[in-house]
Structures are given as C-alpha cells and as structure tokens.
Amino acid sequence: MSDATRPTDDHVPGDDEFDPIEVFPEADEMDLRPGADNCYKCSTCDTNCPVAEVDDEFPGPKFQGPEQWRLKRQSDHDVDDSIMKCSNCMRCDHACPSEVPLSQMHNSARGEYVDERMSKRSLEYWRNRLLSNYRLMAHLGSKVPRLTNFVMGLTLTSVFNEKVLGITSEREFPEFATETFREWWRARGGSDASRERAQAAREERGESGAEKRVAYFHGCYSNYNTPEVGKALVRVYEHFGYEVVVPEQRCSGTPMFANGMLDDARRAADTNVSELAAAIEDGADVIASCTSCSMSLRQEYPELFDIDGVDDVSSNTWEGLEYLRVHEDLEGELEGTRADVPNLAYHVPCHARNQGLDGQAIEVLTTIDGVEAQDVGESCSGISGTYGWKEEHYETSMQIGEEMFEHMERADGDTGLTECPTCAMQMEHGTGYEIKHPLEVLEAALVPNSPGTERAATDGGIDETVGPNREGQDEPFGAN
Ligand code: SF4
Ligand code: SF4
Image (cartoon, rainbow, N blue to C red; front, top):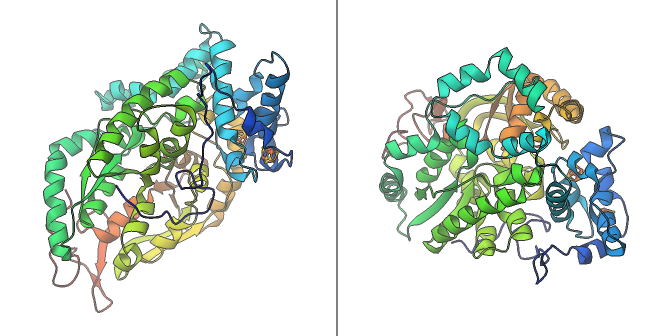
C-alpha cells in the first residue's frame, strides 16, 4: 500500500483531515445529531443544490440534513418523503463550510424512509430496488448480450418499462458488451499474465525497485457495458510496470445509497471491503476507474458501515489518473506522445469534485500532442446514476443538465470526456456526442497498437508505424 500524499484540497475524503463521525456507537440507529449541531444555517448547501435550483418543491439539503435531525431530537419526527427527490450528487456535502456530514445524513435518512415509510409492495419500491441492483440485471443480461440488447431496444420494452415500472422511455438502455471485462481478463491470463507483463515493463524502464501492484475495482459499468475502459486501465498501469489484480467484487453501492437500499449496500460493502482489504494486505493499492465507485469506497463506506478493514480500504483507494499523478512522473511520460483526439468537451462529475479531482484530467491530457480538451463548466450533469432514469425525475434531470449541454455544444468538436459512466450517458443523450474516458486517451498516447494510438517520433514527426514506444525501446507485449 502507498504512503504517498494525495494532491488534493482539504475537503478530500480519505486524507488525514477527513474524520467521519461515529455512526454506530452502541445505539441501534445512527446518531448524527452532533453533525447537525455544526450547522450555522448559512444556506451555502442550498445554493449549491442542482435539484433545488430547478424544483421549487424540493426543500433542499439544509432541510434534508441538519434541520430534520434537529426535529428528530425534539420529537418523534418521521423522515420527510422529499428525501427521495435528492439525487445524491453530494454537491452540498462538498460545499458546506462547516463539515456538516450532509451526505451521511441524507443516506441514513433515505434508508430510514425506505425501511419505515415506503411500502414494500409498491411498484416504486421494486422499481428502485431493480435500478439499485443493476449488477444483477447486467449479470443475467450479459449472458446473452445480443438478445438482451435487441429486447431492450424494442419500443414495446420501453413502453412497458415506463408505464409499468416508471423507468423513463426517453433514454436508450445502454448496450451490453459482447465480452465483459472479466471475461477478457480471464482469457488474457488474469493476474499471472499481468505480473509477467509488469515485470517486463519494469525491466524495459530500467526500474530495479520493488514490485508494484494495484487492485482494480472496475465496478459494474466497466465490466458489463464499457470494458474498453477497464482494458485501458490495465494496459496503462502495466505500461508503468504495475501488476494488476482484479479481486472478486460487487456493486460499489452508489445506486443503493441513492435509493435508500442500505441493506443491499451493506451486503455489497461486506464483500468489497473483505476482498479489497485482503489485496491491500498483499501490498496493492485500490484503483477505481469510476469516480462514484471511488467516492463510495472512500467516503460512504466509512460513514455508514462499521466493517473490519473499511478504514484501510478508504485510505488506500485512488482514482485511476490521480494515482499515476502521485506515484509516477505522468506528465513527463506523456511528453512527446501523441493521440489524435482533438476538441474534447470535458465534464467533471460531481463525485470527482468531491474528491478534489476537478481539473486533473485536462491538465494531464493536454500535455499529449494532438489532444485538446475544454472544460465545459462546473454544473451537474443531472442524471446522478439512477435518478434521471426515473420517469418522475426525467424532466428535472434534463433541466439540470441543460447548462452542460449548452457548454458542450459551444465547444468545438463532438466528443465528450468524463470519468463517470452515468454522466457519460447524460452527455451522449443530451448532445449525441461520442463520450470517452480519460484512461482511453492515456492508453491511446502511451500504449502502442491501441486504437487511435500514434506516437510522436523524437524528431517531432509522427511515427506512423505505431511500433516501439520510444526510439530504441520495444514494448514487451502488444496491446492485448
Ligand atoms: S452549508 Fe453547512 S452550515 Fe451552511 S446551512 Fe448547509 S449544512 Fe448548515
Ligand atoms: S445531494 Fe445533491 S440533490 Fe441531494 S440535497 Fe445535496 S446537492 Fe441537493
């Protein structure tokens, strides 16, 4: 595991100053009242809430958090049903100047609302449970991906989803890949093959130090829908000499928190913490390619669950680009590289901002020749995972996203860039742009034979042969 310091601001989960309050002291239920007492009613959280900005009926994060907890202190107060309108973007949590644990309050209030007030026979409950457990659907659907993609693309299916389940028919269901990331990983030889590739890369790089190892938390979407993101992470990390291991894992829990399904989230967290803590014990750091997954492992797990190893997992989890910035000379490595992906419109996901990661993708990627990226602003994309898939929230979700769509359309080009898979869905839905992950751009610049890779020769020209990485150096393996 790493001793390196995160290059982030002082509000970053996982650093020394982040101190989640004890939620399970000896009581049966969470006691967040001390956190509520920190609130001095400045309303900064309310002015940063994208839902409150477009929905006059949503009382906002101050009410959902500290005010509800104050009410609970005074009387037998039920959680207000408006908590289900919060999209869990966590912008309020980031904005609060007084360290009020808003996200922890909202997550626990949603859990209480679902447990105590939502009928377990209602379609809303089962729709939310289905959306929260996307991994289960994806696991089944990806067994027969072509058939599933065909069925999910039928108008009849969309109509059924909207009329019966309350899942909007305005969005196209994301397609399943014909080969999942884990299938590709196994066919490629798993961690044994990765160890050999990493060792050969370290020899090529003249590194004589200790082995370097990372445990990849791919999450659901990179496994079932966009395995190219996971492949890019593996190839880029191996290029730097890292052995990649891919532990058993379940959903990070992000959609479960957002829907108040805390029992489901707890079960997933039990598996993830146990597997990732074992990998950390073996010397690995945990790397996630999705910023909501890293957010969940870093902040939401220790805030909500008292599981052995949860603090270790929290403090040893990193986002894919962030880790390389801290542990390698990433910008030096990228000097003289080329990737032909001009005019990228970059959107920073809210959960990336919460981890202090805003700005890093543009800063790093624009050191690559041929890459131009424009930040399209700080607004929320509006989809917030499952939120924008619900029929009753679709219009709100699109209203929130309007500013981002406009900025994307004003940027030159028609390719978007973001680290969050659901922000990517919203960006594509609102603009029709193709969306890439920053790791795919890194892969194109650093790993020969990857799609789109071209390498600048040392004389400043472009190596059209897409062969050796640098003059006089052979890449040990092709881009398998
Ligand atoms: S930003 Fe923090 S201190 Fe200000 S009203 Fe919201 S919770 Fe209270
Ligand atoms: S998490 Fe987002 S939607 Fe929910 S209250 Fe906070 S800012 Fe508003």
